[in-house]
Length: 252
Length: 303
Image (cartoon, rainbow over all chains, first blue to last red):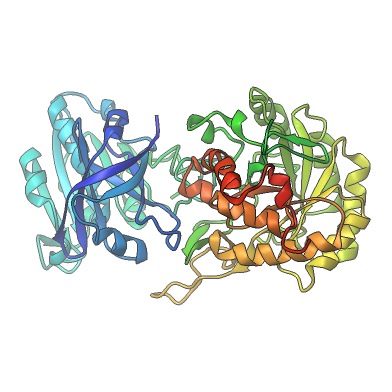
């Protein structure tokens, strides 16, 4: 069930350049059904920034959850200024997450994240490891200052960091590293060109992709974040049918 | 005694609050938050003869105190709305106002004729003002003679009263209102969104794939108030007002301007509970302002 809750901020810190890690106390964690779900955050009580911001859940327990977002526009700038003890209005959990039952105990899952698409993979990694699945992570960033959570992912398994400019890890794109690895299943979240490359590069693998789109309501009512199914005959809403889709289900 | 009940053609409303078309889908998503029977009515998403996919994405962009949208009338088409969405809504004790859209006159007539036969559809909202479709729509909404003729044609086939939704993107909205009244409209709903645009700072290009979109939200409220103030003095049919309502105070302002009921649009995206919240707050505000019944507020600005 989706809840609208005033959540108290427990901590907020900048963990890389313009990347913020925000943890809130929330009862809505009890409604989370899968890693990869997201919440819709009201960045201020003012109507000057009316629309909520969709932010993925990067980890959670029974009392709190953590989100990681990039400070970029007007809304996320306001959000970054809110300190511990204050409350924020959150709608969630929303959407359908990554299906962890698609990979079996003893198999290997490859988790591929790009930039601000990395965060939801962290909870996914934790849950897959807890289940007994071997995980390999490939994390792509623009540059060294944007890199985050490398240590956290390393605790769960092999982790390769790639930067576009080569200032940290290997230089290039996540797909360059993926070629050298063997695995049974891919879970990915990141920029659309990256997701498209993964979908096209691994037509025979089980692949799950988390999409991003500008949203209005976040619950499926406004039809802002719609994408076409691959055969063009129908559509899916990224917010309520996704954000995670099996590769080949929708046009990306 | 109810202090909020409203009677306008086809609609005996327990209160004057309804979600606006396009901001509430067909109600399913919001039914998870509250009992839809608390609403005065529901204006369902625009329905066309055939299913429509709508415009490419991005379809929305935030603006100061508002948002732009260019959804492009995406909907599952008449057959599915009539056969699935309306029967599903009939479990609730709430009258439905069906928003009717199209590209050609015969499209409007076809949808109006069919959809007005559904038992829970108590009125039609003729959408002659969508700014986001290339043909039809807005042309019907900007030329008085064409609007009048379309209203007349739809009135001939509709089983229920017809409200015409006016566009603010005209030089003289009073002229449009008079034209649809002459065409036989039972009421007016206003305002639809204002055409706007936002540009991306890096690319210099429009953010919306459709380039332009309809501006809604609190930013447009003063425009809506002014237009309702003008139109309500010029016509004798009732007005359902809309445009940036977020609170009970806003509702009273729309009544003062001349509205007899109101619709809440964009605010549903921000707060899914906004409609029931306003319904609960209205009696308290009436007490504070010294009114027995909300009807006493209608047109106070000019009466």
